[in-house]
Length: 457
View 1 (spheres, rainbow, N blue to C red):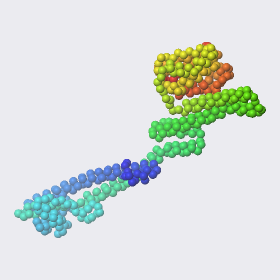
View 2: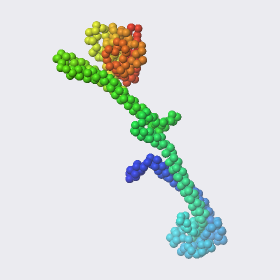
View 3: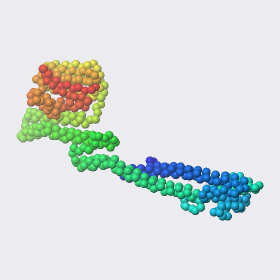
View 4: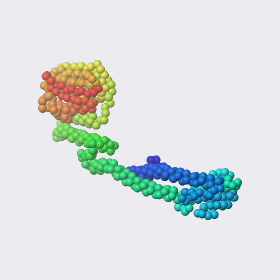
């Protein structure tokens, strides 16, 4: 429904239910008005046709009698006649007419000149007495020109039309009231879930936790889909809040120890005068703890960014170059340790986010060099558009009880793999794999440990 420009602001300020009811009422009014007009027009046409046929038949019978010079026949009930000369003088008429002229001088002149005159006397509304429908024509009788006027009463026809109008008005009014009521109830029922959602959202704004909207599972309409969308939004908000709480908890847990060590080193240095060598040793210790804090903070921020990112920036690149870039920083460490660092990458192109995948591979290589023994092998293959990256060492492997929680944040084994690191390396690797739509797993092979990343590429 299109509204005039001046009504749009007013209409837009009304409640939704009121707007819907008004729209239904206006639309139904137009439909009912059109329907009532069509019914009225059809009935009026039928009644007028019958009245016209009666009047035409009566006029023809009067015409024949007048031309033949016989007595004028009686017409239908309530019929009238009048015979005028060319000057409009009454020569003969029905008793009910008397001597009052049924035609105006202009109509008499038109009939004398050969025109068929038709006219209604009286109106349907407001009600007037003596309503007639008449026809007048020129007639030659006895060598003279006469004007023959035939008329029938419209009382029954007008009464039927007035009754029809009253019934149509009553039926249309009742239908409009019923349609408006049904529209009101339907609008209230349709918007009731929206009001529940609004109330639930207000409760959430007041600090409620783990709130979910009660959405019917057996429906699939616009309101239900809105509820599912809001629930997904609430899930994401809850996940975001959980990540924030976890980030704060993790940071508090892991930063406490290096900060305490820093405080202890500084207090110890300030406890008594120190030599230059002692101060240098203290500064080196402080620097080591600061570097550890920086690395820990960066790792936590990377995990948070990976967990909250909606999508990655995938770019095509050569798999061999990607693996080479990840391994290159660790070649000197492997050489100093007298260990081999071997790579075997397929000659193909992959579509991944190198910003995250390169440091993830580097984490695995660094862990293998730091905690494992023997040769470290990095294998990268692509099969059916899935990338498989595996880093294997020849060390003692993971303790069996550690494997189920190997990718948890700050998880550390009780054996050789806990000498260094923050416990976030494998958590970062899993976050990168998950962000790419893949998985990461850790396992013990016959002669060492293997960590594998699989993802679509």
